[in-house]
Image 1 (cartoon, one colour):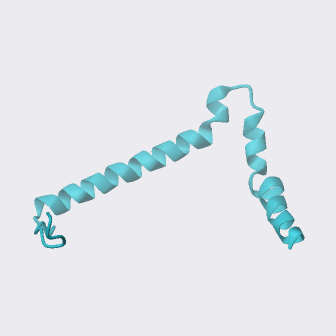
Image 2 (cartoon, helix red, strand yellow; image 1 turned 45 degrees about the horizontal axis):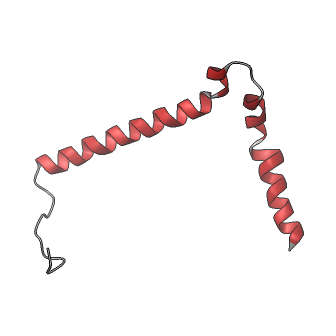
Length: 73
């Protein structure tokens, strides 16, 4: 069982996360954090899209706003 978990460790450390070692030792801060910036841009775009979709449903009055799920509401 120990070799199974060591295999998973080897996969991630030496395989999947190996490209991050290249970025870790760069001298330029902006270039080293390019993946973080890409994740932030994608996350922001997804958030804006989600908010615009919620606004569309809110303007069409498609949401059931009746208070019937809990008696104390």
